[in-house]
Length: 290
Image 1: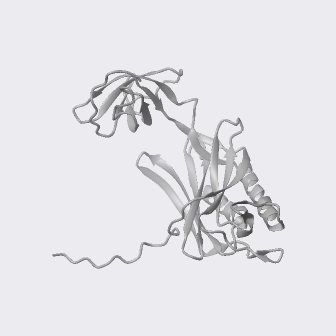
Image 2: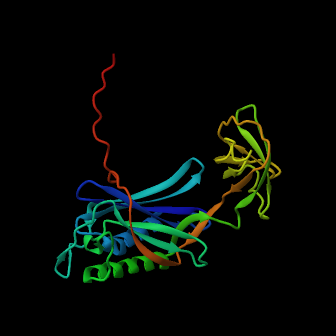
Image 3: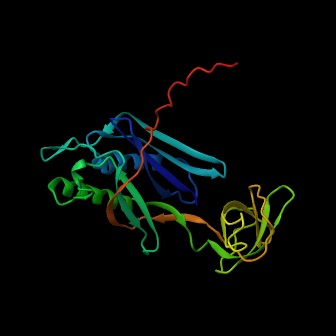
C-alpha cells in the first residue's frame, strides 16, 4: 500500500521558508497524483492559509510516493504570485510572530495509541502573550477557531502520518552474528512477539540493542535485507564489529499509514526555518584553477 507524502511550502516577507507535511493512504495502487495534489492544494489555500499572518505566504505544495527503494514519483504545484494570509481581523493588523515561533498541534489516532505533531508556523503575533499561547482575546479566539476547523478538515479528509505498524513489526532477540567477506554483517535473530520477519529479500530498517553488554558497534540502526528462512538479516552497510559474545535485541520496524482521528492539544513551540522552496542557492563565486 503506497503512502502519499504531501508537503506544503510557506515563506514570510523576510526570506524565511518552512514546510508542513501530511500523509495520505494511496490505496492499492496509484494511477496519477493529480487528485491528491489538487485536494491538498485546496485544503492549503482555504483552511491552512487562514492561519497565516498578513506577511506570511503559501507558495505551493508537492505530492510524492516511493516507487522503489531508490526512486520516488512526484509532482508539484507552485503558485505565482503566492497567497498571503488575512491582513486584519476586527480592525487589528495581523502581523506574523517571529519566524521560528510555532504552535505544536498534537494529533492522535482513534485508539489513543499513537500521535503525531504538526508545527503551525506563520501564525498571528497576537496569539502569543508572555511566552505562552493566548486564545482568550478576540484575535486569539478567532485563530483558535480557525485552527480547529483546519484540524477537523485533516481528520475528515483522512490525512495522517506514516508510523510504526505494530501488527507487522517484528521484535526479538539476537543470537549471534558473522562478518561476511564483503564487509556486511549477517545477524541471527529470533522473534519473541509472535511476528516473523518480512519475506526473504525484503529491505527493512532494523535497530539492534544490548549486544555485548551494549558495547558493540552493532548497537544502532541499519538498513537490512531479510535472508532466506526468516531467521537472519544482513546489513547493507559495511561494518567491522568485534566478535559477538552475548545478548542483544532487535526491532525490525514496518511502517504503515495511521489516519488522524482528533486533535489533542495546542502548545507554543519553535522550529527553525530555512530558505523558501524554489529559491536557488545563488551564484557561486568564480573558481581559480592553479
